[in-house]
Figure 1 (cartoon, rainbow, N blue to C red):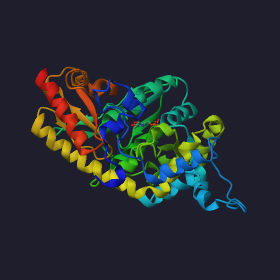
Figure 2: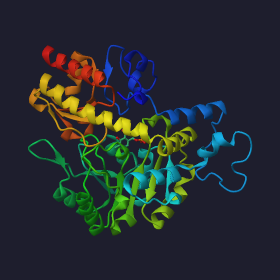
Figure 3: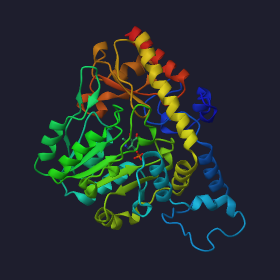
Figure 4: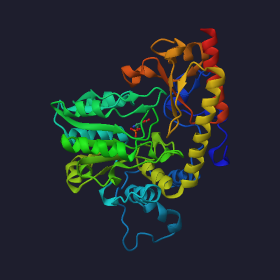
Amino acid sequence: MNGVLGSCDLAHLRRRRSYKWTAYPGDVLPAFVAEMDFDVAEPIVEALSQAVGLSDFGYPNPTPYEGPGSHEGPGRHDVSWSRRSFGESFATFAATRWGWPVDPARVLVAPDVMTAIAEVLTAVTEPGAGVVINPPVYPPFFSRVSLSGRRWVQAPLARDEGGSYHLDLDALEAALAEDGVGAYLLCNPHNPVGRVWSRQDLLRVADLCLAYERWLLVDEIHSPLVMRGAEHVPVMSLDHEVTGRSFAFVSASKGWNIPGLKCAGVVPGSDAGSELLRPRWEALLPSHLGVLASVAAFDRSLSWLDAVVSQLDENRLLLSRLLAEQIPSLGYVAPEAGYLAWLDCRDAGLGSDPAELFLKSGRVALSPGPAFGEQGQGHARLNIGTSPALVGEAVSRMATALRRD
Ligand SMILES: Cc1ncc(COP(=O)(O)O)c(C=O)c1O
C-alpha cells in the first residue's frame, strides 16, 4: 500500500473508538459501516492538530473575513490557508476534478449530508409529499424521508443478466408521475450498488423531473471516489433547465474518511433555490473542526485521495479474484466508485439476511442487505476500504462461515 495510507494494522485499528470499531466484540472483523481503515491525510491531521493547539473549538464561520488585516500578526503563515471557506475550497476542487464551476457564495454548509437532504425536502415539498428513491439504496433514504413527514415512493433499480444495476427509466417515470410526488432523491454514485450514472442517464432524469415539475436532489457524497473507467458528472454541470430546481449534496466525509467531523455542503442550482434555503440555514451549523478538515481535504489532500482511489481500484479486483476462488456462488459486480461491495448471496442459499450467518459463523460483520429495501433480501454489503490483507481476511472468514453452515 502507498505509505500515506498507513498499514491498517488490526491491533492499531481496534484502538479506534468510532462506531465501526466499537459495535462488536473484539473477535469480529468489522466490514459494515462506511468508514475506511486508512490513516487520514496528513494536511487534515495538521489542521486538526493546529486547532487543538489553539483550543480552536468555537463556531464555524461560513464566510471568513478576507479583507485588510485578516492575515496579520504572528503565526499568520500557519493560519492563512485555514481562512478559506468550505465553499471556496470545494469550488476549487470541483473545478479541477470535474470542470464544474461552483459559485462559492452559493454553497451552504451543514452538519452532514442527510441532515441537509432532510432540510431541503422540508423546504421544497409539502408535508406528506412523495419522494422518489431507487432501492436498493442507502437506508436513511427511507428513514430520513419518513422522519421529515414525507413518504418514499420506490422506483427500484433494474438489473441485467450480468448482475449490473441500471436506472429503470420507465419505473422512474411512473413514480414521478404519481399524484402528490414532490421530489426525486438520486444517489450518484449509488450506495450500495456502486454505479456512477452516465451523462445520458442524468439528462434523461433531468428531462423527467422537468416534465413532471419535480425537485431533483442528488446525493454526490461518494463522487471523490470514482475510479478509472467511470466519469462522475455532477448534476449541476449539466446544461439543462432542471438545474434551476436541483440541489447537489457534497462532502469530504466519505472521500477523505472524516464523517465523524460532521460537515457537508449543499449547492442549490439557482438563486431561487438559495433563497428558499437561506432562512432555514441559520441553525444548521457544521462542526468547526469538520470545516477545517474539509478545507484541508479539498485544498491540500489530493495526492492522498489519488492513493486511496488507486488502492480501492486494486481492492475491487482483488475481491473479484478472491470470491471466484473461495466463494464462487456469490454474485459481485465491482463498484465503479467507493469502497462498498454489494454481494448477491441468493445462489448460496443463505436466506434473506446473509450477514447474519457471516457474523455468527465467520465473525465478520457485513451490512445486512434487507436494510437497503426489500430488493436487498439475500444480499449483503461488504466494506473494502481497507488493506488487501484485511479484504483477504474478510473473504476467508465469509468462506469459513459457508463451510460451517
Ligand atoms: C449515499 C450516502 N449519503 C449520505 C451518507 C451519510 O453522510 P452524512 O454522514 O454526511 O450524513 C452516506 C454514508 O455512508 C452515504 O453513503
